[in-house]
Image 1: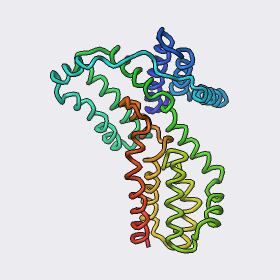
Image 2: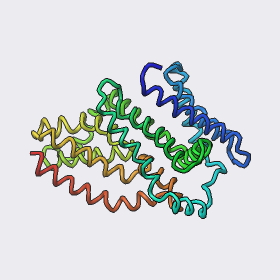
Image 3: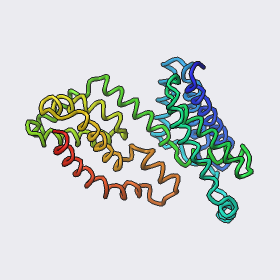
Length: 306
């Protein structure tokens, strides 16, 4: 271990490995073996990825994808504590647990002041999460075992969606390195009237939204679409101010984030954590905002970037 971030990944990986063995030991679990193997492979990748040969890491990633594809990961039998107990604790603790939650953003922002630490905000996020967990134990007079068990239950609820964000970020980097951007630019030039400013703006914003829907990650889409459409067809060809058009294109991409299952951490995970009967409920509600918001973006990009 050479960097603070590696220790954070080690802590996360060890917890995931604990979740794996909790699944193996769950006698009522319908798919204990496949679910346990999924969490075990993921935990090993997170905890010891820097020590594993690239080929083995790639095979483990493929293994995770196969288990997801065959429906091999499902929640175990761990359940929330009963409602009466939770209500009793709410009356006893009031809003004090919120103080533990606030530790996370305080450390995430606080670590940005340490310029000598690589990935300082992420390190702060990890440290803050660990300290928040310990603070919650102290506030509730509970124990570390309860923290692990509840974490495992939430892990099971989220399931395969846990791996989507890093997978999609990696996919964006691969697309960018493979030169997908110029190919998209050629296709867009044929389909849309990019010779006109509004046509070029529409192509840029729509490209960001659609590619974000496909990849679930506006950051990953940004590199590809800006390289292929934003720079050559909007900034260079029509003289758009890059300091204005680029951030607006990014937020136009987030209109796609609001409508896609691929953005699992925004749309699928909340539905799982809230145990909603309709897993698409979050997307259905956000769709009503995403469409008018996208249209507003077109106007703002036209009037302010030129």
